[in-house]
Amino acid sequence: MAASGQDVLVDLPEPAPGAEAPLASWLGWLERGRGDHIDLGLERSREVAARLGLQRPAPVVVTVAGTNGKGSSVALLEAVWRAAGYRVGAYTSPHLIRYNERIRIDGSAVRDEPIRDAFAAVEAARGDVSLTYFEFATLAALSLFERATLDVVILEVGLGGRLDAVNIVDADVALIAAIGLDHEDWLGSTREAIALEKAGIMRAGRPVVCSDHVAPATLVEHAATLGAELHLIGADFAFERSAAGWNWWNARRLLEALPHPALDGLHQYRNAAGALATIECLADRLPVDEAAIRSGLAGVVLHGRFERLAGDHEYVMDVAHNPQAAAIFAATLATAPCSGRTHALVGMLRTKNHREYLRALLGHVDCWHFTDLPGANGARATELADCLASLDPRLGATCHPAVAQAHATIVAGAVPGDRVLVLGSFLTVGAMMGLLERQGPA
Image (cartoon, rainbow, N blue to C red; front, top):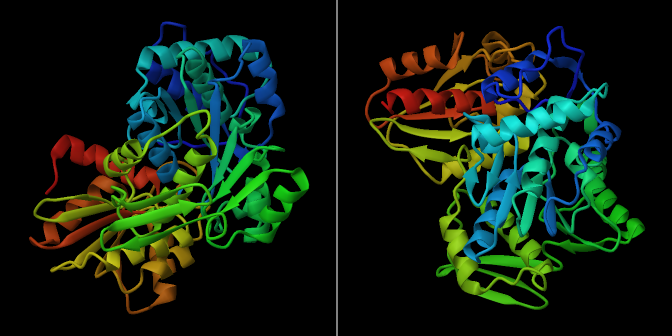
């Protein structure tokens, strides 16, 4: 399961798997120990990190927060620094198919055995300290990075920023991507409140880059109060698209006719601009020449973000799961017209804003299919169908118990030239990717 839980790790009725147990056993044990509520905070992680003797995971650390664009920003930074010859660690969440995707060293997912050993070390050190799934995973990732002799580590925030487990590490540069409404129950119901939570990854006297075109005032004010060195898109760095590619500049550097980022969507220029601003903030410690920038932009890979897979029916898969991300997806979809019908396979978590998410997709879908997602937090397909009907009673939808059944029904009714959208959650996209990996596209 592509879990991203911050829910507390409760006392388990069973002991932890043995040190030699397979990774799958450890992941199953962690899943069974997940509680039913969010419990944010840094004290538990700091306590166990001290018991583990964890130091800094690399000489340079970048922490990335934001509602949308975090994963793309991490991938862009990783691609450029690796093209420049640096050893890079990247920690992201959740995963799509395999847990190992979350922890990358030099562009490769860490193998099962080192992760299992890191889990065993965390379990031995935590004693009576309760940890969330994400805290447990973060401590394991930090220990793996520390032993890998890396030049730079990129840490993606799981939820918010201020109280997220990755924030036990002081970032040399904080990067905050687009800010929208998501996780309102825990972060606040306005962009200003959410931005303040994300601003918690800033550090006094250190750079913070914001690639949101309209940075909330709370973020700007927090940087000023803290004494962080704020770099805003449109003010301290900027970009423009041109026929030859795109241009990026700040007060010190101009890059012209750059290759388009190898990620679909106009929003990826904003993410790339933020990544380049972050790289420039560290240019004295991690110099990067223009050739590496060009290579990284052209070669970046990120699964599940407007990912297109050709076949009799083109698949477009995107983990977008909030209204802002759905609107971005719809805008990108409009630039890639389809000759046939568009079928949407949507599964979402219960905590998401279903109504506004689906509203952003209206007019882009011909045939709607909803699927249940597993677990107490998974929304039922009928909930989504009812929501769609409330938006437009003329629209019908078919409900399914799982992604596999939804996919089979879509394929049975589709014809060559049709398009299949797979949307709403990492769980939905991950399940489809696993299915296509086993069966191949239709």
